[in-house]
Amino acid sequence: MTSSKTTRTFLTAVAAFILVMMFTLNVDAIGETGREKEQKLSNGVWESTVYVTDSKNDNVRVHILRISKGADVTLKAATASYYSPGSTKASRKKTIGSWGFANVKDMMTAYNASSEKEGKTIAGINGDFYNKDENGKTRGRLIAEGNIVNPTTDEPFFAVMNDGSYAMFDGSASSTGISEAVGGLCWLVRGGSVVGSGGDGDTTVSIGVTAAGDAVIACIDGREPTSAGTTMYDTGAIMLSQGCTDAILLDCGGSAQFVTNRGGKAVQRNVPNDGVARTISSALLVVKRSNSASNDIGAAKSMVKSNTSLTQSLKNGYYYYKANGKKISGFRIVNDTQYLFDKNGKGLTKTVKIGKTKYYYKKGKLIRTSDAKAGRVAIGYCGASSNGQNMLFAYNYGDKKLSIGLNPLVKKNSGKMKNWSNVRYLPWLAVVRFVKTIDVGDGVKNLGNYFMYISKNPFNEDAKKIISPLKSVSLPDSLTTIGKCAFYYNPKLSKFTIPKKVTSIKGQAFAYNGKVKYVFKGSKPPKFGKNVFKGGSNKSVIKAPKTKKWKTLLGSKKSKKNMGFTGKVKY
Image (cartoon, rainbow, N blue to C red; front, side, top):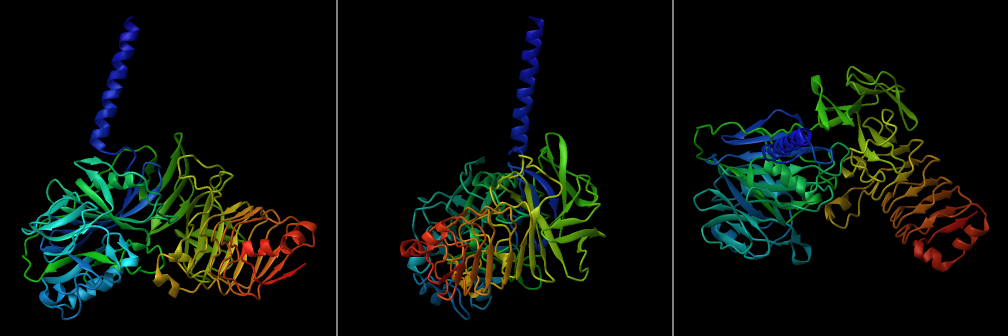
């Protein structure tokens, strides 16, 4: 009886402690692991870059802009056609309804060159989702200089009131008393609670308002080995940790742009998912007033830290992943690049072989053993293969080579990292648009969807300007799957050898390549998805073993049409 009472008392105390911690930390398992030096853009306007672990223990990079209530700036909504060189308030009002497309930096430049403006831009972010078929008309509310550009009530929106204060409203709210407004797809935080749901790791841009009346902007980099992106819930959790009582999601993915001017020129701080800044419909500009006061509002508040046990920091900027109470591997972030180290954070004590290339650490920098002058090398995680082994990649800027292999420090996936089923979105366009050669090391079984998806991006006309420089690919005998659009639009690729164990090649895997010789090693054809070779040259060649199954497949006009292959066949 006494023992049972003691147990109940203990359990009650534990439950109470957990509840207190939950409400104190706001979000369980969202913890800061690193921070770059904060930048003051103006009185009361601070820019920060922080690194956090989300609820899945993925590492995430967050760009934050905090605008204190009473700061010497004003926020201006803009469309691609609203501000232009020499434009006046009267002439701008006549542009309503014309819309158009431009990137955030161009919209900042257009504002600075206009007349009857309030100052110079020091920052800018993308605005709302838009309809490309309607020349960029936004989905939600948009108000510029008191002019109602789009009155729609479909989405919640952020507003600058006539008195200069910031507010958040439901889509049905009146536009009365509002001077500037941009809409957002959905609520992330509402009334002090996280309400966001869904999402799969895209780059996102969000805006919110704190109880003190500050405006907070956060851009979370996604689809990168060093920044996995977050779900909408975790995005909301990060906004809540910044003190936002209400916050909405603006546009995301390739449209996400976070631009700041630290006293020199405007620079896009987040990594563009398309490799170049996408032309979009609207933006929210931060303008430093010409007659700004000299008083300093004060420094930005730091990211709220949790005491998550999933990631622990070591001295000198090293961090390690922890699973079941044991250290499993570590990394150090240097200039936005994640470098691997051993579980004690001291750097690898032996050479690492990634693909066919060996690397070693020298004075904290990763160097190729075969060519110490080859240039800067980036190295980082990229999820787990289907056999549970954590992947890593190395990209050498000297010879434009991308090598992919298995993490020598981790033989089995910890279960705490995000378990990608393949090398999905591995380097993304910010890196792969420079790669000339690819070497995939032994043990890798799957190359995932959009692995080398360079150009002809249906969501970004600007990305079509990028021509893939890829000339050669080396794949391991262990490979079994090549994902959808994995090697899409590589006009300089001339030969591609497919290992014998490959059993599945997904749709459009080799679409829009140039004149390529595809050499298949397996006696049995893999399962081909639809339009694998769509848009390829009629001078391309498939060379396959002279077996009955290959001859049956390649002798069928229907099969070749399904694959989108128009070239020649050789045995």
